[in-house]
Amino acid sequence: MALTQMPHIREGSWAREAGVFLLWALLALTMTWPLPRHLGDAVLGPPGDNLEYVWKMWWFKHSLLERRASPFFNPDVFYPIGYPLALSETTLAHTLLGLPLTVLWGETVAYNFVILFSFVLSGYGLYRLLCALGARPLAALVGGAAFAFCPYRFAHLGAGHLPLMGTGWVPFLFLALERLAQAPSWRRGVAVGTFYALTALSSWYYALMFGLFGALFWLARARPWCTGRLAWQGALAAVLTAFLLIAPAALPMLKLYVGGQTRYDYSLSYVDRWSASPVDFVYPNAMHSWWGAALTRGYYQNIHENMVYLGIIAMALAIWGFMGYRAVPFVRVLALVGALALVLALGTTLHLAGEPVYVRVPERVEELFARGMYVLTGKLALNRVRFGALRRPGAIVLPLPGLLAYLFMPFMDAMRVWARFGLVTMFAVAVLAGLGAESLLARLDGRAGFGHLAGVGLLALVLLDFCVAPYPYGYTKTMGQPVDEWLAQQPRAPVIQFPLAKTWYGWALYPNCIHEQPLAYGYGTFVPAAYRQAVEALASWPSEEALECLRHWGVRYILVGARSYGARWPALQRELEANQGLIFQGVFRDRPRFYGDRLLYLVPPADTVPVTELINGPLTAYLRDEIYAYVLR
Image (tube, rainbow, N blue to C red):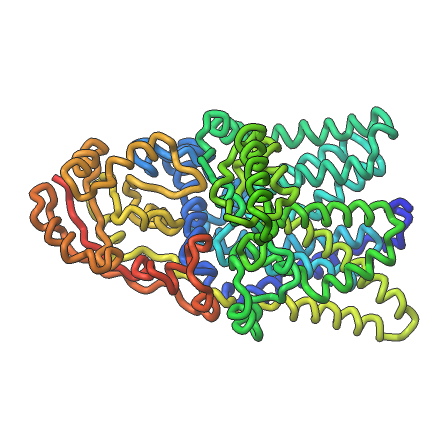
């Protein structure tokens, strides 16, 4: 049965569509509380990547409108080498589209607006897709809520992963793909290319994920080898449109990739740690307003990456929807895409509670297995990786298909976090859940008012299952610290912080918005290779060799976090006081900026979730430090 042969309703009036859009806006404001109270002075979540992207909102305005220069290279980060922003996410679908807001109301408002708009667009987009499939508005609202407010999105919101919030274009992409498959034309190909480009320009992860699964969906639906030249012409229009829109951002990144700038010598252990567990997809919402504390204590998850819970109500409705519409090709193909994405989300080996599962075997079997893995991962692979860190005496891991994807697919070695493929599964579940709601409500047709009440009830249950308000991981004030305000009054010159490890968090970039001094450090997905080599000279800080390196870089201001050094500080302070090359300027105590945490403090610190070390681990001093400022002679 073709898509257009499914039960269909007429397009709604502009007034109704505006009302639906307003409803999504109200739901977004409610579900993200207390964000509406802090649109101009805070961001949700602890200090981390959220402040990195607030800084990027500022940087695009500062570079384009004040410096009148390209925003894709920042000479004031990783100074004196500079920072090609293609080493990290530029997320142009947010930074550029949010530029007018940054100009009018500042970077914090712009960041928060694009966050809220991502909820609205994700819900409304899936609503429109379901309406096109023939679902009634109430059923479409149920499916839209299952997608817009899933824990995956709230978890990445708290982590400050602005690129991953760009899910709102996905429903429009699949609707355009389905229309292209049904009636190929170059116009429909342009629509596919445009929505794919917006998805890709939100996140390079999504460029790979939805490029892969979007192509698979179209091939399965269009069968271009059977339908002829017109199908290929539509696909070519999609590819050309996407290329023209993406190329300005993608080509610099590709150049860095080919030059080896975006590759690290990862062990398979590091790659593997970002795998989801099958339990993660069914373990209830550990961010929930009512039972989140008990669930957080009961099962360990990487809180920002492995919250891929599909929702008990959404899953039940999705099963019902699949059973009711499984004869429809769109439904069958979408279910297949969601299932394959789930397999990839499980990563390179089978996991449970954040750890790989090992099976005891005879030593001879383990030796043969290890030899095979060494050959596969170190000799045959396109993307080579070291297996040794995953080896255990007398036990073997259980490899999954994701391992082959990592080893043999181009660009996969630049992608770390497998659990993010779960978003494709969530999208499929949400669409099927909307169809399940439609099937249930259709059975109630003719019973005056009861169907409407049942639809509202289903929507309420989905929202209740996913409710996290007030946001359980708190919020961070976007403000400068006293030392930043001091630096803003000083002559322009490069700044560095010690311990240098303290700069390896997204919030380390934010002070640049306040004082606009060059930073002899930085933060991003990847670090310029030349900077990685140069910074090795600072390992002996505060030796004369390290100070000479800083002089060579032109560094003038040195900030030292006393509390961050812990028990080592008194000895280090005496060494600094005795150094004739340093002129002491004063002590600046950090003001508190993180408030409202209800659950994050319950998560055990782990190196895979660095922010937990800032909240309740060994690095808490990083957030509330005493900064000793020096000028380098």
